Image (cartoon, rainbow, N blue to C red; front, side, top):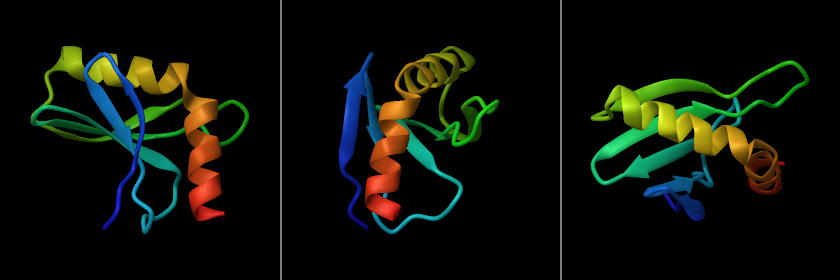
Amino acid sequence: AFMPTILQQDGFKIRIFVDDHEPPHVHARCDQALVVINLAAADGQVPSIRTVKHASAELQRLALRVVTEHNDFLLAHWRRIHG
């Protein structure tokens, strides 16, 4: 499945699958580490880690910080792709 890189920061490539599913989320990859993070899609929500593969606690925190900083931008891309 095609998964464009939407953002690159702090060693992470943040991607969204074009044929993915709800809830809105991104795949943050850094080398072999992968952190899947649900985006904050409604008032009062905050991004949250859903899946972790090969990522240390430090990498998880960093991925969550990057996604939190860019949540609105990433959510806009999710909605552009998925409606």
